[in-house]
Image 1 (spheres, rainbow, N blue to C red):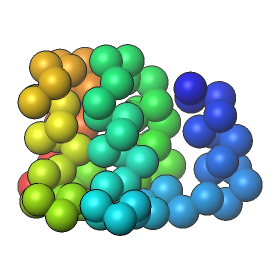
Image 2: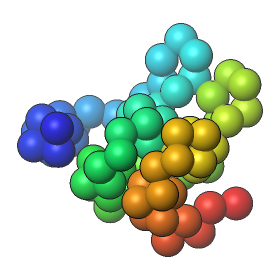
Image 3: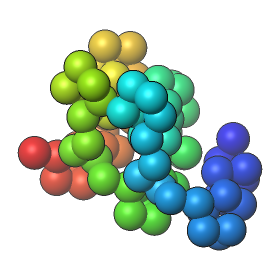
Length: 80
């Protein structure tokens, strides 16, 4: 939900925080077919190039799940 994510960002949440598998909020957003959360995270400074523990980036997640709208948003932000 973009509203909830926006609230966390406004409260100072680390936009590039990582879980035990080195996944960021953007990795999770890339799994959702809607691109609004991914766009909001990127607009607030999420790093699109952070790999998880298996070296998969958010773009990889979007490709694996055929989330082309999310992939487009990620690619618009100069993925390496």
